[in-house]
View 1 (cartoon, rainbow, N blue to C red):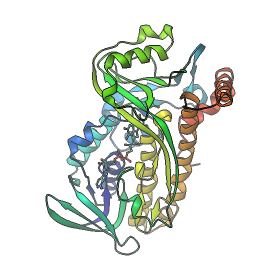
View 2 (view 1 turned 90 degrees about the horizontal axis):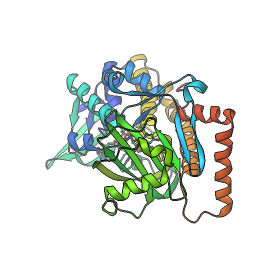
View 3 (view 1 turned 90 degrees about the vertical axis):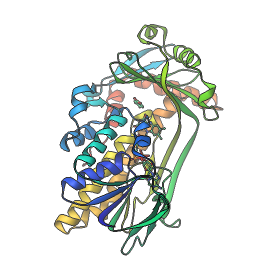
View 4 (view 1 turned 180 degrees about the vertical axis):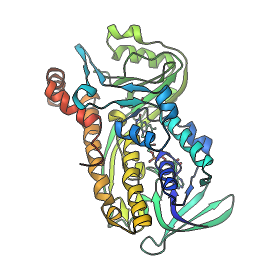
Length: 390
Ligand code: FAS
Ligand code: PHB
């Protein structure tokens, strides 16, 4: 097979890149390790930055979101023993976020690719990348048959565990990482959600209340990274959530049987550079953020904004200026997201073994945020996400 861009990974980054390139008349083939249903069965992100909302609207992917999504104008912060408060993001930034699930976005992306006759190959195995500094190609097996795709460029959109990042030579690749000794146990329940999305700090651990639609709630509690989902019955989850949220909020919590329950590990990770020859990384293939800042999916979209612009300039204008600056432009926004996500995770989680000094600093960080509109304004600008361009 031959195409202009071979995209490894059929998650949000790979599908959105294929969609945008198609709109510009550029061919691609998406190869995906799993089945489409497996990809769609994953429960992940729930909050979109304003920049992501704009991209979905620009590329005709916002119909259901604008009908069923919920604008998010700020965020509520609960704190054990202290008054909770609202950070008024729209007041400080003039921008709105949107509560809309990654699952729905991925469904719409698959529907658009199928409508447009996009080439997608599922259940691939043994994917390998070749000749990244020459005439690149990707080989893989499928149902026992070996195949090869010759291409002009490879987009590595294969997530944290994919092969693309590792195709960058070890002596070139620089990795930066924080692993956390805890994860997020998340459940989905078919009950009306709390009024607002809220983050909560409690000495027992972090908790969070979110939603997917007016009849679908999403909740999380911090659990040790050694916990397994089977350690947590629904009752145990609801008891922990009630302990970690203040009494006055309990009336908003409608409990019920979980229809999905999983533990997401937390990690901060960045691999540089995001380009090596004809290979370009986008999304989780290059970086991971703890979900505290709701940045993971949004970074996948901003990477694709930069990468699609670069590929279109190459094929349509014979200009490589954006290809040459891709890694540097994407990483500027990546590190800003890593920063706010790391700081929010430090502020809102209990770190096993932390000393009393750490605890006093956390308390002071909270008091400063709760007590100062200037600090809330600065937080809001980081939480809404950096603009794609200066
Ligand atoms: P993805 O991982 O979504 O997609 C990569 C694709 O590549 C996958 O479909 C995979 O099957 C495929 N692939 C892997 N290896 C391959 C190979 N060898 N060949 C072909 N295909 C291959 N973000 C938030 O903002 N908020 C959240 O609450 C949140 N929760 C999360 C919970 C979990 C458990 C995880 C893992 C992530 C969460 N994220 C969250 C982040 C998440 O939304 C990612 O940022 C988003 O999926 C990134 O999209 P992609 O870069 O496309 O990577
Ligand atoms: C979610 O709805 O899953 C969600 C929302 C905000 C976050 C993390 C997760 O920061």
